[in-house]
Image (tube, rainbow, N blue to C red; front, side, top):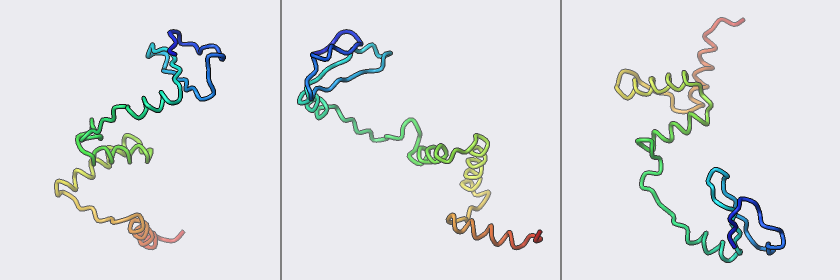
Length: 119
């Protein structure tokens, strides 16, 4: 029982296990009421598209993973640019990156702090 308006049908049209599907108003699609069995059939028959490159439009999976990490880290544009520049410097062989973990970095900070004048 499909409705042509974007308003729900009167409640007497509902059955206990009916599924009401509402689409975003900008889609122009009407509200759709499906019986539970019909909903299950349509959900199980949905076309599942497996993409060979699900990270697209990024050029590589690593580019996507880097971008995802940058977003999760809440870095500023300037910090991301500096990190990208550092990576490219090391990739070109103009620099070396030797930090192996957070612990390794923290231990190095602790050693550096012991070299400073105590206040």
